[in-house]
Image 1 (cartoon, rainbow, N blue to C red):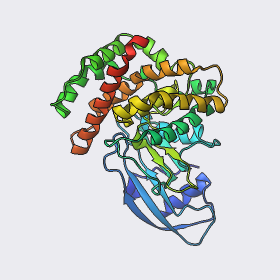
Image 2: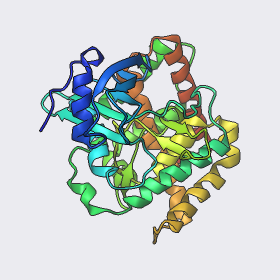
Image 3: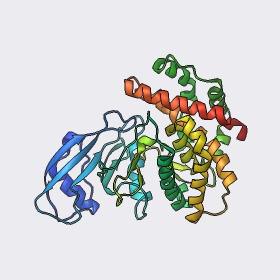
Image 4: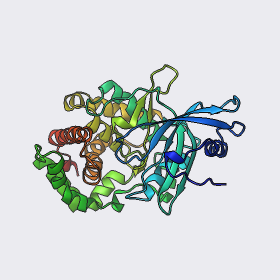
Length: 354
């Protein structure tokens, strides 16, 4: 049985939530009688409407959530965009103890991208401001969470049959890269894109098959691909999971350490990254080994980490060209992101490792 997908937050009713929770298995005996809804995240990039819902029931039922998050991803520009996150919870996270929100219900219409998700309310968890950046200690907690996801799907051939996964080959990166300098000039006219970053992007476009193999080829696993600190929540209570990863719209298959590169490049201030990245990559590799991954050396992991800057460049360019970055908050976000990526490329010259 499938429910009609509501037309946005305003169409969520107690009756619809009652049926959705029953279908998802969260509660088949509780009737939702009222909803107190609070919209969250006005500026969330690729995320559509999101709200926290406090629920009242006709009677108490064990397992029925007192609150939850309802999420609609935008239908444009890619109908598969919202589909990926629903499929993630249904096919990747299901039955596995991964550091992600509990899933209550999800539905998609692949014809137009209409979708809805009901997820665990993690508002008690602590967030970190992207512009301020995280600490190396916070990055270490996030790296452990990423390693647990990557180890669970390491080398799993079933990922190859999941045609909904994001792949760089399906993007218009070459076109977006051509627009990127002009977009930066519009958003941040005071910043000149560095020569090193331009050379890296030009090489990416010129040698796309090689880049795809180095980012998405074996040893592959399931990756988040947008693992910046805004998409990581930290437990605030000893009983909480240490870190939870959210927002899986760009999920795909690739080399796991590219997620680590994405996190450290985007979310650590350059001085903190320089002091801690060797240790954090070694920590990630150690977690993989402890979780059963074999045949992947620390030297290979480090080289893949450096080349993982290409995955960061992809999302940086995509978000700069396709999203509305005109608000002060988004401008500050884009400035920090660009400055940190530029510093990484200047520090490591990842082109030389191809």
